[in-house]
Length: 222
Image 1 (cartoon, rainbow, N blue to C red):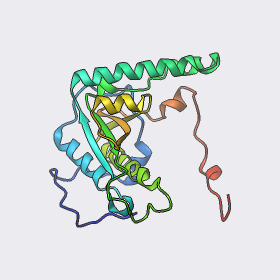
Image 2: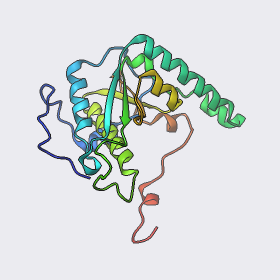
Image 3: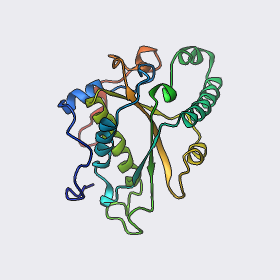
């Protein structure tokens, strides 16, 4: 994947605060309950979106778009929909998993005050996309790289991000009027936070622990 470094100047304001990329990765959390209720200011939001737009993409197609949602009615509508999806998931769990899941907060849609819907356009770049000929998913992977850039740059700006995945794709498509064949890849809750948790929520609440790097690294064959 590549990015054309001459694709245009970085537009929004001055650079954000200096922070090691390793520190940003270490500090990154899927934020739910720590939003302060303040809106992210436009300067920092602009820098965060620029970081997302500077992500590498297959064939330099930049197949993402970012829908910034701050309308309170839209946030409330989406939060209500997500709450229903959460209930459906909870009802599908066996009793012992339901007990673990119940105290876990899964979104901060209204508390954050800002949603960024990241979309993927499979038609961006036309029919013959360099690098997507044999692995079509590289297009989606590109949009996910933009999400990662948004997330890490937000941490550097002391802004929290929470990725909401409890939703029906058709509902979100209609809610923010996404045209076909574009599809939503993520709703990101974005806003100032009181703090970043030291331990990820799913670990803190006992849903699932992380595994050590040694279990994930293989040499030569799987």
